[in-house]
Length: 449
Image (cartoon, rainbow, N blue to C red):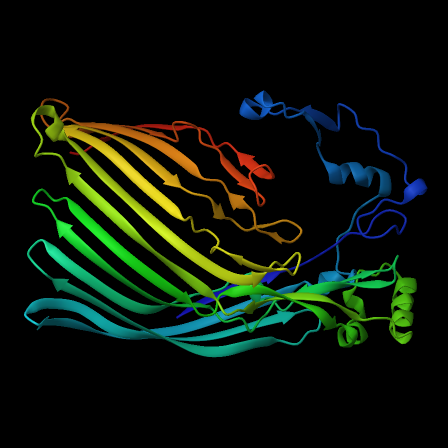
């Protein structure tokens, strides 16, 4: 049994001479002078400074500065949207499974493994302050699986597996809160969006096959292929012709209304038969997509080589992944067909190591090609994270005799080349973010009595 609980509680402060949400009151607001006591000038350092990034102004305590001019700022839920965007979510899960082991022969080949099924019942519900009616869904998932290992020889084996997997949506997508954007200046409905308490989890039918060969000295060579069919991938769906009239009529206080005059304007807007059709977005279970690919791994010590070369070894792997999902972008409503977020087409790792006596030395390289990395700004955005190559180093020495026997010294250096994390939109010239995390150096010691 497991449970998840989450809540979102919105509050807002409207300050200035009734100038609107988070707006100052034009000519009636006295400008605040920035001085050395309430602000400072900060400058970038490191590679940002080397690339000409300008210095910038930092206000030490913005809230206190504004309150010195307009008085206390009190956050509450008098703004309608703070009520409709506030909600609680609960998710209760009961799960059980049955599994049987397999130990037999097939066509004279030893076969072992297991087969079973996991049964999961989910009860999820969300309650919003407005409209004040709980909404949710209860459902049951059956997740079968089978894993088989054929022992072809003493050093070779073939693995086959198939299963259905489940991954739950981000819990805040289950929130029943909603928002509506209404332009009082233009007397026009801009659109809106909501969560979805009836979302079901991601489901995937998946299978893979792999061949493994074991060397005399403990090394291994493997090659594998995999395929996942995504059955209910969660996407953001946009209805460009959604009729907001029932919501406008019932939930008048859901709009960003400043006073009774605005509320009266809205009533006139509805009474006049003004268009109430707009764009509405919400998460939903889409048709899904696929993930497929293969991977190769090799690990072995070179003890078959002459002289000092016998103390070297390598551990390396490479994987290729092809994926695709179809969905609509939440900020534009355009149909997109993109790789699965977070998955690179190419991922490779290689570690060259040297071990002799108590001394161990290794250099590691980690590479991954670009991948989609969703981020939240005003709306969800879909930038790419650029490809990266990270170099790490580690050395250690174990004292196996003498007065220091039992002592181990360790040195690690991560990200030796200070590889940055870069994001971009569509093409590399359209930079999103550039982050440098620096090199990390660790020195440690342990002693075993």
